[in-house]
Length: 278
Image (tube, rainbow, N blue to C red):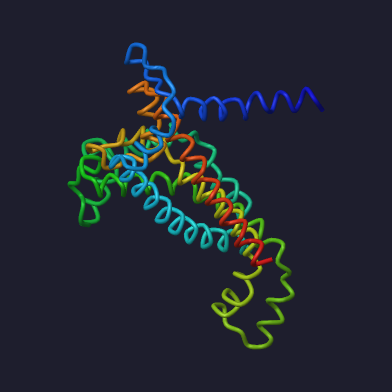
C-alpha cells in the first residue's frame, strides 16, 4: 500500500501544499526578485479586492441559477425516460451524447450557434418572429450569461438526469399501484412518493452539479473570455488569469486556496443536510 499512498500524495497533496506555500509568498514572474515571505497579505488583498468580490458574486449567482434550472429540467427528463415507451433504450443512450462531448468542443459549438451572422439561434428566433432575432448575444452582459447558461445546461442536464433515473428505477412500482387504488393523483404521487424516495439520488446530483458549477471555467473561457469587460469573469477564470496572464503565483495561490475552502464548505453543508435527512 505504501507506494500507492506515496503516489496519491504526490499527485493530489503536493500541488495543494505547493499552492498553499505560494499563497504566503510574493511570487510574481513579471517582477524581478519578487519572491519573499508575504504572510497573509495575499489573502487580505483577495478578500478586499473588488474584482475577487465581484467574481465571487457572479460565481455564486451562476451556481444557484444553473443548479436550480438544470435540476428541475433533469427531474422532468428523468421522469420521461423512466416511463415505458418504444425506443426508450435508444433515447436513453442518445441523451448521453452531450455529456460525452468535451466541454471545450460543446462551448465552441454553442459560441458558433449564438453568432448573429452564422448561428442558428437568431435565425430560428427570426423565423418564429420571436424577440431577440437580431441580438449579438456575446456582446452584452445579460445576453452573454444567457448563452453560457444554455451551453452549460445542454451539456450537464443529461448527466444529472441519468443519476436521477438510477434513483427512480429502485423505487418499487407497487407503492404507486397502492397509491392509485387509494385515489392519489399524479401530482400527489410525485410530491408524496417520488420526491422523498428520490432524495438520496437528488442529493448526490446536487453535490456534483453545485461543485461543478462553482468551479466553472472552460465554458466561460471559450464563449466569452470573461467579457464583455469582466462581466462574466468567475472565480476560476480570475484564478487562471492571475496565474497564467499576470504570472502572479502568490496571489493566484491565495485565490486557489480560497476556492478549495469554499468548495469544502459547500460539500460539508450538503453532507450535513444528508445526515439530517437520513
